[in-house]
Amino acid sequence: MKIKFNFKNFEPSEHLKKYARTRLEKISKYIIDSENAELQVNLEVEKFRHIAEVILTGKNLHISANEESEDMYSSIDLIVDKVEAQVKKIRDKEKDRHKKKKGKSVRMDVISFSQSESGQKEPVIVQTDQYEPKPMSVEEAAMQLDTLNYDFLVFLNADTERVNVIYRRKNGDFGLIDPGI
Image (cartoon, rainbow, N blue to C red; front, side, top):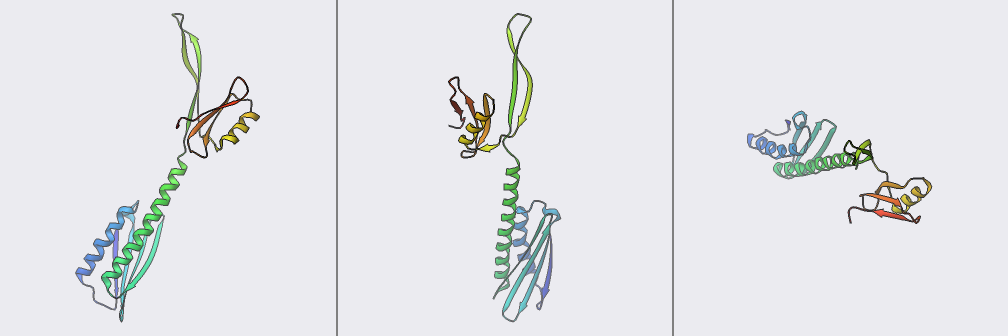
């Protein structure tokens, strides 16, 4: 992460630069592409106010914040906490968005039994299908199975967020398979 400093109305000390740099560099661990991120730090003194402003830019990232106090070191600490909280929030949102994209997938194999040369029946996978089951309640799945002419329906239980199977029994009732119980 590239850090640039601007000072206004006071002479910068090396100790202050070093302090700000070490405090601000810990933010880079929360940034996905920290090598290409750029951090602009503006430090200003107005009479008794010490103002710190930070502008962080990167890939899909733009954060700006400012803080003021009676001491420049305190202003830097406050701004680091503020920017760190914002970066963590953005990172967590990105993780949640990525998790939602990645749904639970179900693979269904159609198995047929064929006669082998020795005369025994052996299972052979004839067809394979993979899909994401639709989230729905058990009642909704039962209604859908009732309207369709299927023997079973694989669905994502909206209450438990687990893959379930509802099937038609020989007497006409429905059965439910929930592997998480």
